Image 1 (cartoon, one colour):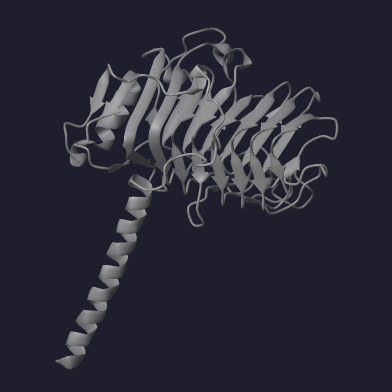
Image 2 (cartoon, one colour; image 1 turned 45 degrees about the vertical axis):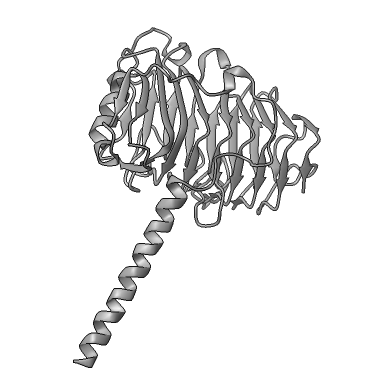
Amino acid sequence: MKKLIIKISIFAIIITIFSCNKKNLDTYWQKGHQAGNPEGNYTIPKEADLVDVSVPDHVVGNGTPESCTSEAFIEAVAKGGIIVFETGGEPVTIELDETAKIFNDANADVVIDGGGLVTLSGKNKRRILYMNTCDAEQHWTTDHCQNQDHPRLVVQNLTFVEGNSKSEDEYIGGGAIWVRGGRFKAVNCRFFNNVCQETGPDVGGACIRVTSQYDDLPVYITNCTFGGEEGYGNSGSNGAALSSIGVSWTIINSLFSYNKATGNGANPAEAGTPGGGSGGAIYNDGNTMTLSVLGTKIEYNEVNAHGSAIFFVTNDHTGNIIIEDSYIKNNIGGSWYPEYNGISAHSDTDIKVTNTVIE
């Protein structure tokens, strides 16, 4: 009898510990840790700031967390427009049963606002959000799909967790979000434990992958967190947070930490290696483009190849980097641009650094 009581007690303790850990994890995802760099105070231009959602087109939920379902969210995204959530003031994690996909002919604007209460989870099985102006299944709307001004996708006041694009074999990378064409920006968002393919020279963006934007206008990332604490980082072959081809970025008051580029052998892949492993936080490849890092902290990111903080290569040597009021330090791994630790770029890349710590 005593043995049975002891066994039951031990089992109860294990269940209690598991429940507490799950509760703590949910709290971290849902309530804790305001998005962005707490020390960042760079002035945010209007085009990079929040979008007004006071008159929504679609409301997911009817006042309880349970009413905010995967089905309702996916349906709202397919219709487009301004999407908000009614959770009754309680935090909620929506575990997606399939990837939410944007249709190019549904609405020119797609704004998803979680009100700081909504976490979208890929359940470590699937990508969370997908937009592609050149995917016929999402309906072509122009004869120049790679350079059209819509859809204009905005995600704000949301948390993205456990997005996983490893099963994708055509539009690879982008564990949480994959974008081609139109416009995209993220404001006040957090990204934890998202993943994409672990190796390969031309794959990346465990959180966000972007391959083109209308008229080469920049992607804005404002007050966002990628990782933030040990155990919550994102990982993928290259660009463990952000990855792109021929895209400019303006990153404002954001935080990148504890993310890892897991590939090995760089790009192009060295003989006998699978390739990848560059850009612990950010991976930029292409031609004429600008990476602006403003009021942002990048630390404790890791690579196996190059650019423990930033990997930036323009094939025609025309791109440039602007870093202001930022902090880039304690990133781990190789670099082949010796002037600035953690940044890999061609030696003739125009890099302007102002009021910034880079160590």
